[in-house]
Amino acid sequence: MTKQNIEEKLKEIIKPYIGDEEAFKNLTSETHLLTDLKINSAHLVDVILDSEEIFDIEIDDESAEKMITVQAALDIISDKLKDK
Amino acid sequence: MNIGCDIIHLQDHWSVDTLRQRRLSKLYDKCELILLSQIHKTPKIAEAVLWSAKESAYKSAYLGEARFIPKKFILKQVLKESLEFQFDKTPIWISYKIEKEYVFTETFEVTNSVKEKGHSFNYVHIEKSTGNESYEVRKRVYQYLKNRYGGEWGIRKTEFGKPYLTYNNKMSEKKISISHHKPFIAFVLR
Image (cartoon, rainbow over all chains, first blue to last red):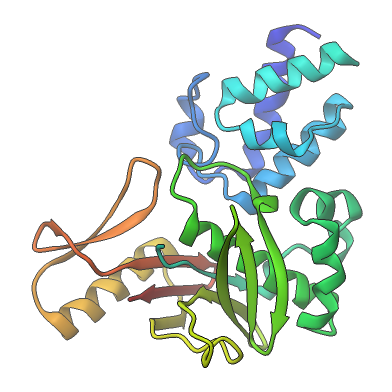
């Protein structure tokens, strides 16, 4: 799976849970999932669960803690895909 | 330590079918799930209280960059209307209230005489709102503070998104925590 594929899929996963449309339109790698996109922690668990299902990976607690920005999420998903 | 509060509209909380094992394992330690039945006989309500309490504990004790760390706040014991959590070896006490439509939790400072009943010295406001919750809750905070103390009050956020109060444009020593879950709004002041 290419980096672009992962990014597109991640955006689709995130979209239903965002609280700030404008931040989503202007998404960059540094966009913060909680404070910029305003995904609340109750929904961040959905992002993690959906990512596990769609990419067929397991995101452990330590990795979930590091999923702060879009880039961090992409890095974690890419690493887990490589380890498969 | 700061203060933290959280409100959950039960109707809009995770439905029982999405409360699957995989979700639970992301949010809670196994030892916490054993304690759930001591909070309430209905699993959905007990879980809503536990999740809300974790949110309150996070708001109160975690001051760093926002991140997903529910399992860093571990439920240690369930008392009548209060819960004891531990975060980084520090105890955090949370009182909880279960109503027909919502559950509400807030942190409180503890002495031996108050921990059993979860008594709080905070000012608590809970309301069912008809407008935009984020706007309405701020409006209520300003109304209360202006009526009680006069002056101009504001709510600002730290670089990590934690709210704090300003009084006449200077940082206030009063502490605040805000929560809303459509259609409910809540805030706590100390």
